[in-house]
Length: 139
Image 1 (spheres, rainbow, N blue to C red):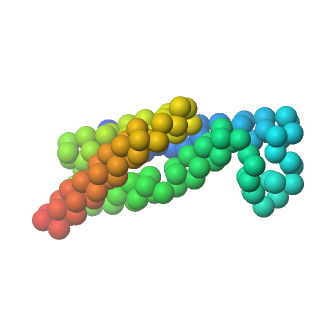
Image 2: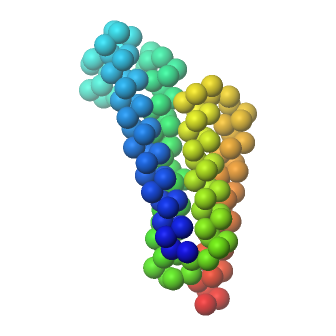
């Protein structure tokens, strides 16, 4: 079971790296096309940047919010040796929600859909932590 759960971590790491590359490409393109002055990068002031630059930057930042809580939970689950099928399923649902959130955010950026996917992922994370806590405290 640990390997199935660790797979979710690998997918989350790859997603974060993909978002970093996308963010970089969009920033370089904006700078190259003079849509964003080079000095904006000194303080990362993206005021006036186009929506594609901002959404990619925000999404990259998002990969260090809820996912950090998830990565800690996975580390605890493995350390405590309490990984079971329920944690694996919740983990995959969380990571799939992160993939969907990123796709919507840097794509069409449909706010209601993005929010619904975010809330679903947050709920999966909450359930993961509750199940982890029960497994550890009742073991």
